Image (tube, rainbow, N blue to C red; front, side, top):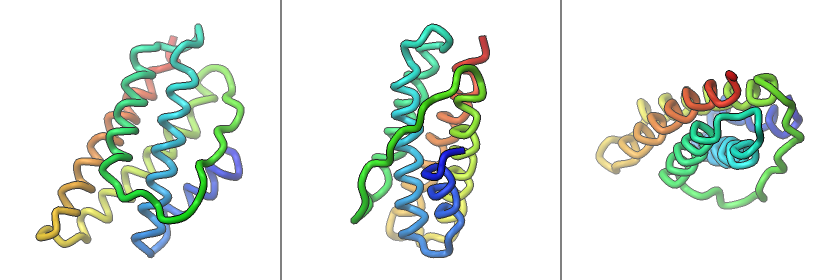
Length: 135
């Protein structure tokens, strides 16, 4: 796993909600860009890759845009399932972090509902990503 993926993964476990939300935004951005990058290679199911990208970007749009930072660099993607495995794990951790934040959130502000909806999209993206390179 690349250093950037490790950093994002670790930030998803932080206690500060803003740090977790920024990490979730970055994770979804990375996974969505990964899906875009592999959508047209011969070893991938392009329809499933497009589903991954759509679900990631839909979930990301439900989160607040981080106040600081720059887009993370997408690392070289290994062939086969090894290339997507780190991102499947990252989406797992992102889903867990969003579910945790949603369960701790104030339901009167609507944030809890948005986080729960984002978590559902992350779960769908993760499921689709598992099938992208199963050929």
